[in-house]
Amino acid sequence: MSLTVKQLIEKLKKENQDALVVVSRDSEGNSFSPLHQAEPSTYKAERNWHGYLTDGTPSEADGTVAAVVLWPSS
Image 1 (cartoon, rainbow, N blue to C red):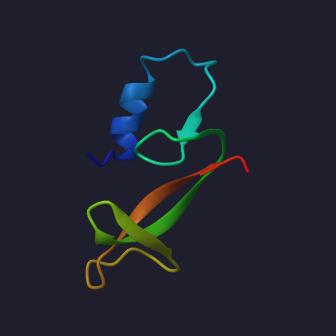
Image 2 (image 1 turned 180 degrees about the vertical axis):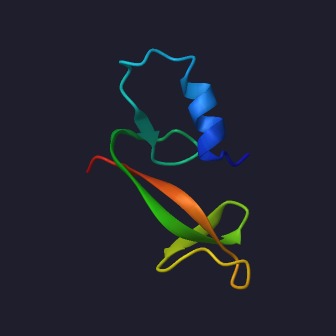
């Protein structure tokens, strides 16, 4: 299931606002890192679960959409 920013905000409103945000390395939960940064970007899906970030503005013509990228601490 993919979440929009609006859906994420609604989910997070119910949580402790002082809680640390932790990002999973993969869907199996093999490793975790604190969230370092969130930034707007443009995303193009190659499959339902995989894609890449692109430069420029979102465009239906090339299948890119607006996204917010969550970067883990390194």
